[in-house]
Image (tube, rainbow over all chains, first blue to last red; front, side):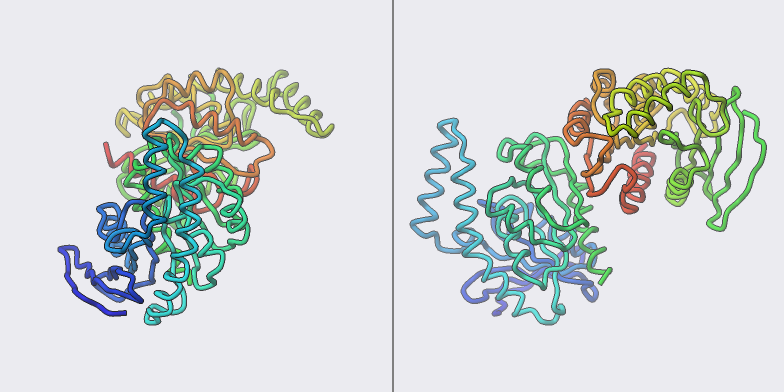
Length: 240
Length: 240
């Protein structure tokens, strides 16, 4: 992990850009000793410095947690492959034509998971100072990556997912997740059918799961849920 | 309002039994100046001193709120009418026979709402010291009373409901509720069908509503949701 720059913001949060195995990322740390580490995966079309990603990182550091974010494959500063471009073009065309891009998005998300999961595992290997465990927070494409990651990765002890519906692959992965999960849905999400979101919540094997649903669209998760999710991860980190 | 006894528990909460217009109740107050008042309506078969009712009152006083609870008609120390007895007998028989008591329970709940709503309004009249506003917390039968009460009563500024499904009457009342609502459902509730619970959440007119669903049966609302609901009501009281 090669750190390239560091800055500290008014709230005392230090953010350090890094490159690890060619993947750009940011490590956010609170002023004092971090109470735990969160793997923060962004959504489709975003990157490590998108406003929502930065805001969630600050909510976590305010709750005493460190956060590591990575640019997803084909996102942010990373090269886009011909496959990335093809999916982006097709998804845009489908939406422009008023069609349902759900299946295309699910296929792209599955591709992203297969590419990103080893990157997250490698980053976890590279941050031994935070102990051998971390929380995970990813919604939309970030959840599509995170659900199979958390199913496969015993070092993740709690997770926040959301803004995503059931697919066969995600249901199968959710069925082997036994750590505490908070699952956020938006009640009027035009990108995630209500039934599909509820079916995925249903699929998590853990008995320690909570669904939080709020009015509004895909991008309208209310601020109190962002703060609540950070508090949930901090509570789980404290619970050991 | 005639107070009949008072006691203070180890956490500094004072509970005062009272009778108001013939209805027995308890007023719970925190050690300091209360930040607001909560109307706490119990569920079917419970009363003001049921363990869950007492636990919720203490979570509210710990959050700085006063709570007033009332024995519902036909419950606790109150006389049961022939109608109460008939409903109780029929509901028990239906459940014993392995049948669906849902419609009977909904009919009884509607009767309870018509009897209890004026009692809650009268109690609110009798507690002017808390200002002209209050939160409401009622689940199951308590929500069946509370939803039409909150729809009709402008002094209620925020509400926690849950463990109840859509009926025509409740959907109609929910459609005129515009104050912030937290709605708790149990994902494996054999008394409330999942779809009916979700349909009732959907019906609330307010944009400031959150659904929280957790695994387990009707009586298994997790402790973190009880604390979270008290914090929600305290936050709404503080928001003015």
